[in-house]
Amino acid sequence: MLDKLSKKLGGIIKKIISSKRLDESTINEILNDFKKALLEADVDFKLANEITKEIKEELLKEKMPPGLTAREYLTKLIYDKLVEILGKEKFSLIGKKKIMLVGLFGSGKTTTSGKLAKYLQKRGLKVLLVGLDYHRPAAPQQLKQIAESIGVDCLTDEKSKDTFKVAKRSLELSKKYDSIIYDTAGRDALDEELAQELEKLGKIINPDEVLLVIPADIGKVAGKQASEFHKLVKITGVIITKLDGTAKAGGALAACSVTGAKIKFIGVGEKPDDLEEYDPKRFVSRLLGFGDLEALLQKVKESGLKEEKLKKVTEGDLTLEDFLEQLKAIQKMGSLSSIMKLIPGFGMALPEDLVKMQEGKLAKYKAIIQSMTPEERINPDIINTSRIKRIAKGSGTSEQDVRELLSSYKKMKKLVKMFSRSRDRNLMKMLQRFGGKLPFSF
Image (tube, rainbow, N blue to C red; front, side, top):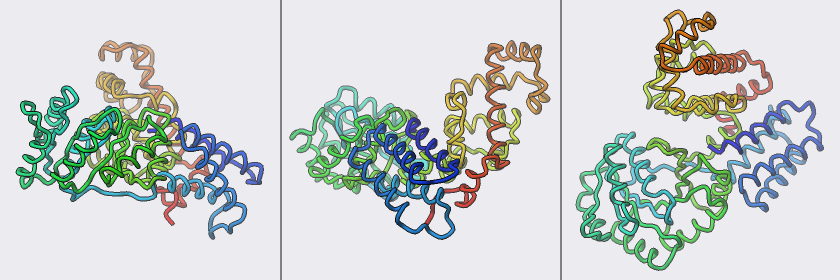
């Protein structure tokens, strides 16, 4: 998520760590880069200026906390300011019975309804999806398809198309479910008709949560949208969608937070599992390249991947045979690059070809590894030209595909060994100081 911003922020952290001296000139250069990164992510100009000014003032005037070097203190200030503008707190939905999603047309409400249902289902709750959008053609059918794909119940009425009748019917069924998610209609603009419909639905349903769904690609306009919806329907939180594919996501996150809207979830992809609780501290940790072990361990738990195998990955001892054994579980967790970015330090140094390794390639790599002998999986160094030809033929792939797999595998091993051996001493020292978890916990 936010790869461009993350890359720039990771570069700034690297510059801080590698600086021989943090004099005023170096600090100005670093903070200039920081401000540019925020502006390119569509963060408001005035806000970006205020943040960099405050960091400089605190760094030059305030006494450093005991035990921190100047580099660590500057990193902490950047981390703290990012957390401050991107939300501060984490909020939970567990235990909330009725959840109503609202938003403008095209914001992704229906898809998000399914993702939220999946999120609650994975936590042991019985969920009902309710379709209340009879303005957009095929919206009820789309919701039904999503419900079937994730294995939850769905209530719609395509014959009468009576929004309020369906809402009342859902309340009669409420005792059978732990959570009910309502997918409401949207418009191109927040007009009086939409406001009246949502207000009436609110009175019928009496929801525990009213969540505004906003796409990240609208940037800082998200703040205005959040304010307008809150005035009309008293939203209790925000879900930011499409966070994986836009340069304006930073603006959307910052704008919502500045207006006081509570961001509760973020959509980070197209799959049903691609919805995450929004935790600003963990989110910023990932942006800066410090990883997110909590998210990693949650993915491990959900996928069935054995933690000892994950340890082998992080220590650089993973063989192709291990890789094949755990490939199915890894695919459930997402791309290899997204997993590696959750490991502290790796987000700063992933090679481009590893970042681009997607599921399609993983399926191809699986076939290649299966065509290798046990000896080749354990010791890939013995694979020569003739073996590559045999493996390619046996897997139905090209020789180039086999070479690409071996190259990516070697780069990954080299990368993890570099970190496990602490070659980048300053980075490793900083990560170890903060327990390899969030960079700052005080």
